[in-house]
Image 1 (cartoon, rainbow, N blue to C red):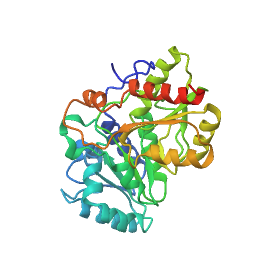
Image 2 (cartoon, rainbow, N blue to C red):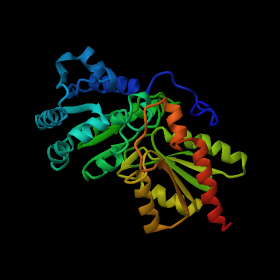
Image 3 (cartoon, rainbow, N blue to C red):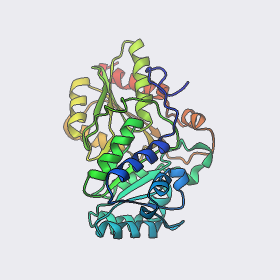
Image 4 (tube, rainbow, N blue to C red):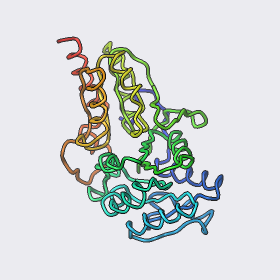
Length: 325
């Protein structure tokens, strides 16, 4: 079943990476200080939109991620707003030291696109799947971390990242995601989660592709008499602590859903906040300690338990514990 069908979401016919390319071109058109650095993957990340329109502001550094980051940091120091673009796995695994030293420690005004995050790049295989990115970027205290959930939120996130002064990491995806927000009316504030569905029996907190899956799960749960609140936690840092505490107090149970390893994922940070403020039953949907194989994205989501059905199962367990069953 197509993602978002059960929740009645409208499909979108372009992959999220294409939407990123359009959004990047838009901010580059608005702000002449925006420059783009490419790791020889502009056709895949869709950063090439800027090369086609503003070739003098596009730099292909080649397959040299450490240089990519270092040059980007230098351009930031010269007053530009660099977007450093490549696959999440390549940047974070090949250039983590440079990201830490040249960008994070100096609180440098550079933006990093981690494209092809999660397992839904599918047939490209595990070497290119960014499944550790939440944990790795989470280890860099100065970084804002953004994970858009649909086309409108991608546009809003690219704009917010460009306007923010300081390091920002943004995750993009190879697959198409259904429309959750109207393209011209997407609420997006760094550090403030969006309530995309109201409910009082439990809260599902999701990011990225898992927001649509959470809305599908909420539709199924409603048929079972369980009303789920759904939070789009598009900002992983700074995380919306107030929304998490309110969810715990008002709904009494929480499920987190992420296309990332559970170890070091955003669910563990939410659990820490809940444990410190208002402990409630929790369940976690994400990747176990495993590297996934190459396959169709939909098949991977099913095999590795990242579907609406998996969220439904986790939600029923959390609500049962809440009720003392």
